[in-house]
Image (cartoon, rainbow, N blue to C red; front, side):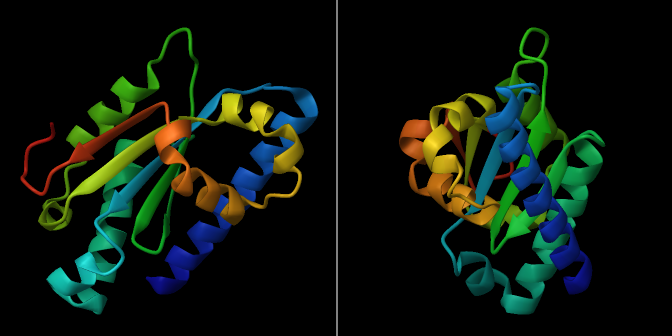
Length: 167
């Protein structure tokens, strides 16, 4: 389980770095968003379940999200945070609506013990704006940058409460 989780994280980070490079080089050939799901504060899941069970819960959530998202979407975990790369067609798909629909269909009761904050970024727009900085970023530093600046960079941010229903 841990090996699979680590391999998927590396695949996710490699793909994100490739998308960053393609966007800088070709100027938005593909539209993609990045969804960040922060699962409580850093130790909240561990406090609720214990470290080992919290890790099992996060893996179960990732599996559930993979089934709900499309094969072209990549789901990964960085600590207790979940990240999803979502390619989309802006003229026919509304990323916010799609994410809400997927999260509703992929409810995982285990994570309902903590509040979650979901942030949706239209990365194609941000990467072109960050052209000079992006050349210095790797995928992890980009994720950290987005997480630190989500209040200004996220296209949408909303809370999922610890109760079973989405708001």
